[in-house]
Length: 264
View 1: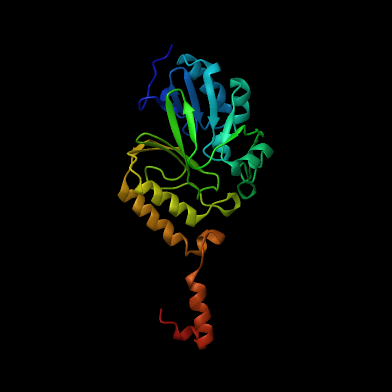
View 2: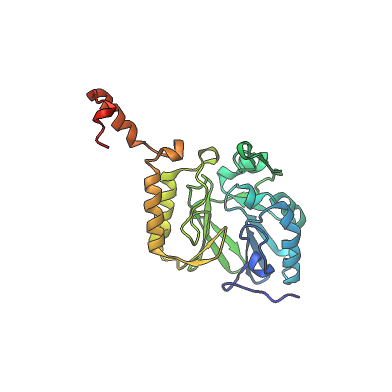
């Protein structure tokens, strides 16, 4: 039997437990004999993760569910395989049900034609939908569900005491999950979610990628300010709400201004 390397009471992160990077962060939350996983990662990581769980002496029959933070391939490609092996249920936000059930490659980022990326996305049925304010019971523990959209419209976070399993909302370096209109990103919602996290009294953020870190309000504020500038930049396409340069151009045309009169 392996020694359990809990990063907090009742919480094991499987990359940390393995001693090497397997994929995205996969959190095992346990109480008494019961346990759940938050995300699973790619399909080729499933066997190693389940073998680790077995060696940690968690009864596989006591898995109470596989929880999807959101429907991105790097988080949930292995859900169908893990569900079959563990004979458990999948929990996700209602807006993740269809892309998961259909194995939608576009919405899950499994296919990005411009980069010649085309990954398998095995379909998986969501057994239980969870949304803002719901509770997920694990033994004597209770995970509080937060809906924190922005990166995707189905992005969930989960509070456990002073911990927040924060998905792809923010990482230790201040970066955030990819912003792309094709898979449901919304900058306005993203900013609201980050403001909610900043205003909360949680002490630790447990992201879906990279190291766990203490909540840093200054870091969050800088990230929020950066995303607020994205709202007005053409770089972010239809995720932006406007492009002030176009208003300037319209005024200059109406005024009959020539390039030679450009103050810059």
